[in-house]
View 1 (spheres, rainbow, N blue to C red):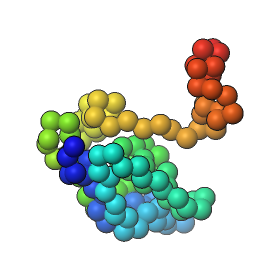
View 2 (view 1 turned 180 degrees about the vertical axis):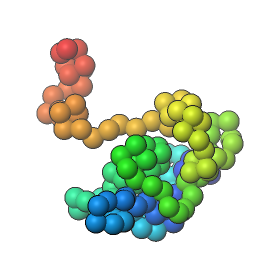
View 3 (view 1 turned 90 degrees about the horizontal axis):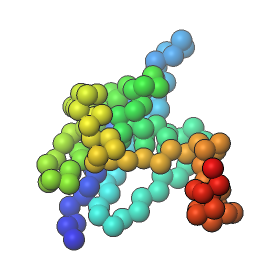
Length: 124
């Protein structure tokens, strides 16, 4: 198995424009994810966990965020290295779902850890 990182986020900075001015959502975030690794973002409410994840998928822009600085390097299944920040939204639509996926944390649509997944999937 290749030890080359699947994703490398380098010095990410994400800001939001508000009526009161610019609000910093993420400042100087760097990490990498290698095959077989599990990476968890842990922090207080409002610390930038969701903004970081949405930035990786380039979905933060749909919520008013702007990636001001940094690189998000993604190594595709065909061994191409892409800087996702430089990709157009059209390109990102073809990458999302085909190369990168995300499980959104929404309390009303999340699975309940108390019940087996088979029960939850067949319940509907």
